Amino acid sequence: MDPAVLRDDMVDGLEEALSSELVDEDVAMAMRTVPRHEFVGDRAYENRDSERGGTRVLAPGTVARMLSGLDAEPGDDVLIVGAGVGYTAAVVADLVGDRHVHAVDINRSAVIDARENLRKAGCEAVLVDCRDGANGMAEYAPFDCILVEAAAVRPPRVLLDQLADGGRLVMPMGGPEQTLVAVEASDDSEPSGFDVVDEYGPAAFNPILVDGEQAGGLSRNRMEREDREFAQQGYFAKSGWEYEWVDWDDRLDGR
Image 1 (cartoon, rainbow, N blue to C red):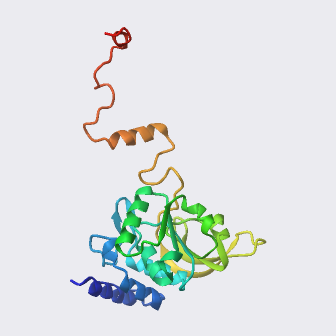
Image 2: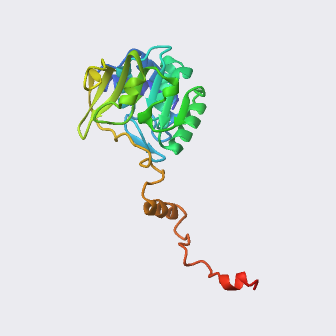
Image 3: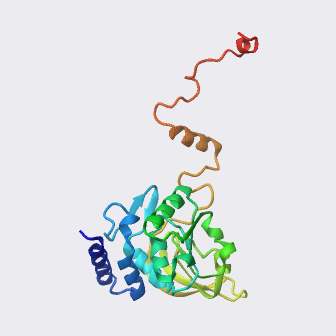
């Protein structure tokens, strides 16, 4: 079936299913435009979470809720923490322009995948970098909007500091029970450093990762790291003692 028809059916279904939630008209139009099958190969236009390369792919309904809350406008500079497969970044690029979108992910393989997917979808100008998302992208700050696709008890202070005046950060906040919220940085005299300005219902996201916790990354524990590296060599990989014995006395004597 024509992907354009599938996209229209997907968005029509989301608007009906999320009738009690605000689905921004511009977000709906962008989701009717972006070819999600370039990012999600299997059943791309169904409203369900999926997995690709060890990365969680958000259901279209979740993307619609988050981006409607983000309220990004053309020309806004946007930071996305959690590039994933790149689909959310592509929808944001349709809203604000490719060169205004910056995305980070702590998982290097996800970054490579997102870059390739965005290229295939015609969004080559979106910047995707591998780094700890909680540290943001200071060299490109301030951002008008920051979208965090991972949960935390409170917004990272560093990200709040990278918001432009009047900027907006959307993220699932709390744990284990989470709520999708929009926050703004508050006056420095406020203990929390932020104000919740809107809520968009319950959410269930994985927590923000720090270096050493990412899928495929090196573990802080040396034995765990070596075990994982060994396992990745395959079932028949030699563990050490199976190798032929080397008689170093003979070698050193030239025999």
